[in-house]
Image 1 (cartoon, one colour):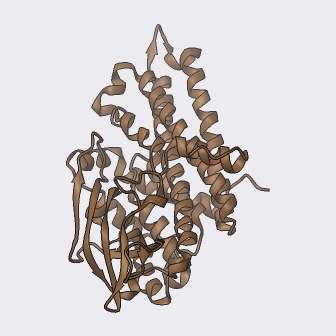
Image 2 (cartoon, rainbow, N blue to C red; image 1 turned 120 degrees about the vertical axis):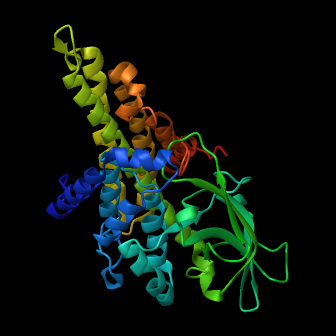
Image 3 (cartoon, rainbow, N blue to C red; image 1 turned 180 degrees about the vertical axis):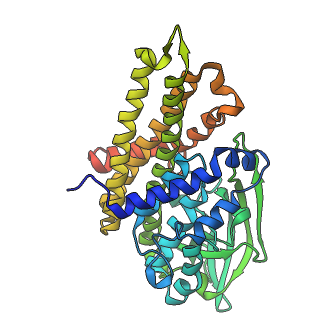
Length: 387
């Protein structure tokens, strides 16, 4: 067992961190406040191969695993340049297609994931289903050699930037409206007739936006179905584990950014002729954040290693725990950094105030803290199912 990252991953982290810092948090905040996107950073990261580190080499990627992609995500966030679409497009969508897609789907999509020229959103959440994916009502049925898709989705990230959306739906027999529905994944181009989306206004300052989707009898070709119609449960969880790992890495990066800001200010700001960091009332909470951050990072790396080894069940447990721990420490890191800064913590020039709401998202998405606790109680502890 080795707790030291490989030289290759350490070099990758440094290169990504350098790129993120070359743009800087001011770049991100300006884009977010103007309602724009981090397009320039995304495109450059794609050209340099950072977005495609986990795409198989035969399709132009780096041939690495989710651990390396998670490191890329973490470093961008730690540099103050988070890109939420990283959690979705090169992680969930690319990994599902690489693992379960047809040869044609791999040839069609993976090279674009590798160089960042393709952006794909992921749509699972529905207005009436929430965390209960068994209640998904978006439905597809065979028609004329292809598929007809109908339904609604909500809180879908990055649709306005995406070329297509990987939609989680259910299939039914074309002659029956009451038959058993099976989960299935479909690649839906965002310019398909009947595909509509509307922005959800959020009280967040972010360069990634949320949308509601309306799938009004969208006609799709037969090859829009990813992989086998009967393997969708396995395909779905092959995407959800990377989603949780990447979500954890996103939170870890933001926590590092906030902690670095808090520590730097505690060293520089002097009151009564000593740096405020000399006072245990500020030093101890920062030290606690550091400890919790390192623990969450270890669990995230464990989850990534299990996933990359093919242990999907073990990765599921670790990924849920990692996502929980990282979200909690991100909230504490930002809160403590603001407290260290005092009034300056809410001043725009210090770049912390907008994070107060943003890190709260980690407790809610991609799976709520309560559902993580339900998972651990049921699957890790063997307690009776509570829902």
